Image (cartoon, rainbow, N blue to C red; front, side):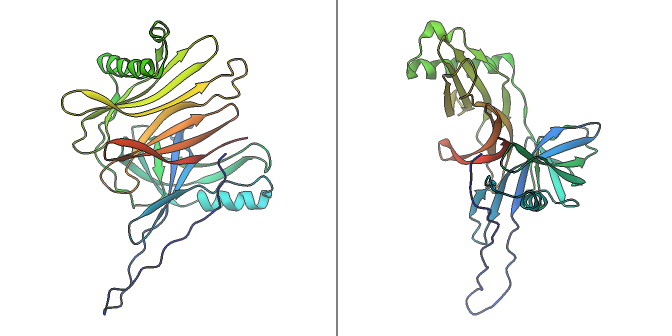
Length: 292
């Protein structure tokens, strides 16, 4: 796991010139992935803490734990991130489905080894949420998320194949590439539809895994995000890093959803947060998750 200090701090509001006043400081927001449970129960896993300031600048962090953390400290982290009774909003495709309260939390594993922090929530919405956020600071919006059609999948596969061909892969090998599940959605107003998925190409010595987003600019689709991982250890998978799209959410309320991706490794997982900046996507956070 990526290690960083546990920082939850807010900037102090400054008073207007000549008119002292109290300015409400926006709350920090913990964002969670939501996994199905039993019945109407779901499990929350912390992804990232979004720290907000009065200047509306945001930074992202996750209180990853050092190996020497005691069991007591581990439970303190657990209660800080996933506090029983705290309200959360549940989202799918950027749309707020409902609100609920965290009913409990748990620590699986031990400090210095493999451990996972999680919480439980019950909900009554008819649709399975994929993300949750710990305050009312994220209002959400109408969802346009759906599974990609065969035609949309063909578009993304063609663009990914061309990108990998330009990268240097043999076109004969590319014909055997496998496109995973494709999601079709809108990530920002006026941005057109976006196609999100991963294209894997396996040879005798490597697996090239290209996570990509293609967006419609009004005349054609073009790639706006390409993140390539090359796996060399095909026997044990020691260098495996499989990227899977989780969902989208406007974490900073700027009108453009951030894209959240799960990264699965040999014995652990993390999350990445991608933000759109003018013409392309940049990774602004990688961490969280669990494992060893």
